[in-house]
Image: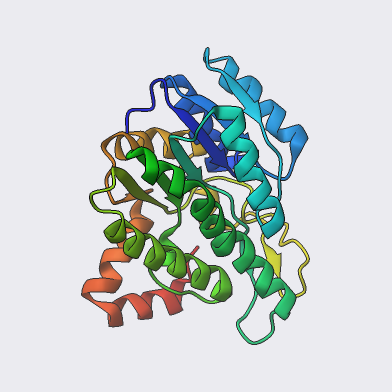
Length: 264
């Protein structure tokens, strides 16, 4: 979908990929409504969008709060007079093992990374379907394509998102709604530092792979053609994105490399 003149709602827009996408969409002519938990950081995103000459506003809420998600969808529809494109970039990382991660932490990861996006889309998409046009853009990640140590629940949530998007895309054929999954690899964002450990405490480290990654702005730049064209899925990153193909074609070799080197 060409974002020019469209009403676009972006979650996870206080930093990282979400913020960069919001600014890129604003620069392309969209009216931007940006959301995340951190209201002060959202105002910075609003200012950056307005600096591109776009109309922009903030709507803070917590993706993990189902009640807040429903209320936010109603408010967003009023603020924008209808949502033409929903960009779901909100998420939380994880650095905990499958057996030792506290259940509350595991549930938090799923509430934010899977259910928050799903419930938000379920609240917004019916109006798009009634109108006969719209686009859902979901930021997933390469760990939605394979699992890795200390990423169990994060990877599981991202796998779930991929399966859900694939099914939804087929169910919406002929309705005028496009479903685009953006699959970034290493991007230099705060997600590693803010990732949850087994006990829910923040990881507070930037992983080596992320330090070598592309910037959020570069990620958004590469994502824009996929959004405009409405492609079903787009890998974005460097050599790490080749892991998706290697795992599919030669899984034994890929697992061996992953065990020796880790994921960076």
